[in-house]
Length: 240
Image (cartoon, rainbow, N blue to C red; front, side, top):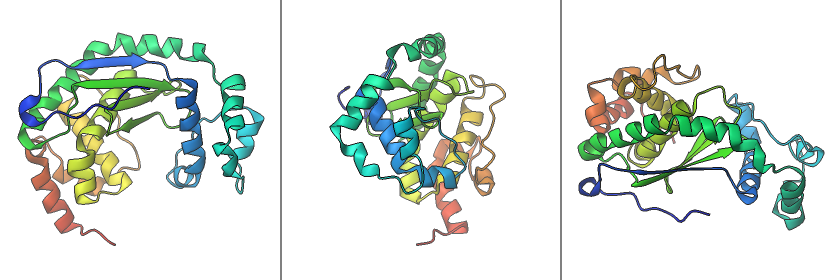
């Protein structure tokens, strides 16, 4: 497992980042599947159709009312490692991510400007890992980690940049202003389209994103996004 990385402060951002691209371990994949199974009702409610192991034992755990306590058992973890995990399943997607490496690095370097302007979280080291299961892309904002689904229809650069933006704004925008899931996703889509449009031509927006936020995330306001979010939550107050 990779060690945690402390995000750099504004005056510590270097013009070079380290980008590590690797497959997941069996334990990482198992933990991911277990997490999705536990949150499956939320994903279903929000329209996500997640690929899960086809193994009968895990298909059964995806059924309503299944006893998810078995996910805490070591024998279930061993079953996954022996009968589900396939270390060769990531090879093609790893090559595709590597082919996009320079574009991803360029995008992550651009976070420096917003870091200096209003504190977008920037890491000196980012890690991209792959998965066969769950959502097309996800992120860990505490470790600077992006996870890319091997079967996603999106290009690795699209996922890596999108999730990198998530990492950057999770604390200073999403949590600070209490954005909902679909407000958050629309904000990230807008930033990707505006700030990284040259790297992601024809960027496609998620259909369920909350479009009320659009006038508050523009090419002008991105330079000082917290101020725009102050106006947004004033115009659309948070509910308890």
